[in-house]
Length: 124
Image 1 (cartoon, rainbow, N blue to C red):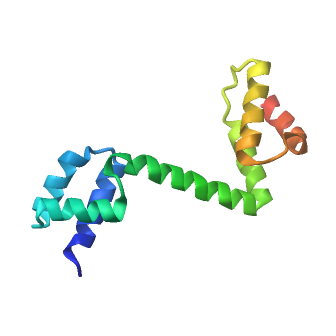
Image 2: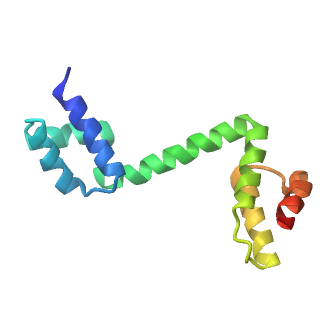
């Protein structure tokens, strides 16, 4: 097996954990007996800019979730209602309505279609 594969996996995990790439790279290169410049070059080719890796992965995850919701309207509705249920109960009526509209846009649902469920959530 290519020794770079496990090193790149470890680096990806470190970056997702919020570690600084400039500190993680030398440590991982040392652990796997790899030349630092070679690991850095492979990492840049495989993972892209290391400083933005965590952010890009979060964006990809969000995009995949949005795609899944678009394919399944029931999943979109359930996700939307779960997000509405987790809204701060101390929000004013106007702020709550604004948040519901924002969530409806994010989850690509019609809030009017979920009006009864939203009203039941509000009574809790």
